[in-house]
Length: 102
Image (spheres, helix red, strand yellow):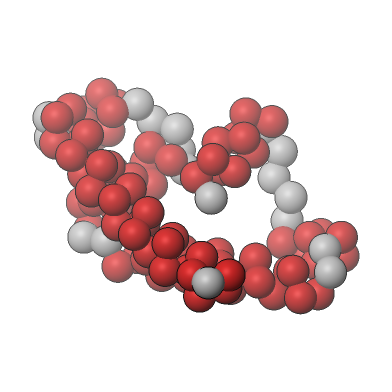
């Protein structure tokens, strides 16, 4: 999902979910919607600072230095928070994958 977001960000386009419903088969759209919902549930379960740093980096494209300046923490702390978030997301992504394809 993170790679897809990066590619989308580079392309500079965002496809609204309602447009996807028209182009994807209904079952695939439901699966994508469910996976996205599960992903956001995991992101929402992250500790506040961890979630905030992760979203600032991934959604807003801020550098670690910018995040550190904005939050008043060190760059090393930002790195640790994002690393922690990615570790949690990777672990949950495996569970989601096995749920659908395992």
